Amino acid sequence: MTLSFTRGETLPADLPHIPHLNAAAFPREDLVPLVEALLADPAVLSLSAHLDDRLIGHILFTRARLETADETVALLGPLAVQPMHQRKGIGKALIAEGLARLKAEGVAEVLVLGDPAYYSRSGFRPASRVTPPYTLPAEWVAAWQWQRLDGADEDLSGILVLPEAWMRPELWG
Ligand SMILES: CC(C)(COP(=O)(O)OP(=O)(O)OC[C@H]1O[C@@H](n2cnc3c(N)ncnc32)[C@H](O)[C@@H]1OP(=O)(O)O)[C@@H](O)C(=O)NCCC(=O)NCCS
Image (tube, rainbow, N blue to C red):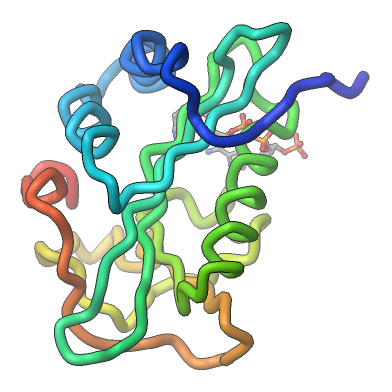
């Protein structure tokens, strides 16, 4: 059965619920400080999914730049879906909504560190040449994925410059 949820920009009324949603989706990782810092950053795109006015999914995209390139890029994450509503297409829909918005504003490439089995379903490719802020463990290299939004087929390269909230080594392995 298809779930009839809506998605769009995060509303002020969603904000108190976002930490709880992330804590429920990531029981073994404390991503709440990262999420709260990113929500306060105007360079971050925040989208939410609702079912009957209840928050059931949330995604962040941090707009960023590369040290030696003109293009704007974005980093996807965290993405969290309420456990009882996982595997119903909500995560995929939030990713698609974010990619469409970032493409419309001219973002050249989106990066994500996550499970390639999941993100490949939304067009991401493994092992970006873009240099993350911390060296990834060898087994995570394929999980550092990329997708061009501007029609080009080549991965960008260069050092990714991210806001302070992302500058914690434990977020990168
Ligand atoms: C991972 C997560 C965001 C996916 O969102 P979702 O709404 O559950 O996923 P979707 O419904 O869009 O897609 C699910 C499909 O992807 C597949 N899939 C592959 N890897 C997966 C994974 N690690 N988690 C969930 N689904 C995965 C599923 O098999 C499913 O396929 P199916 O529809 O053929 O059964 C969500 O499960 C979640 O919040 N998990 C906990 C937090 C997390 O791991 N976030 C991602 C951090 S990078």
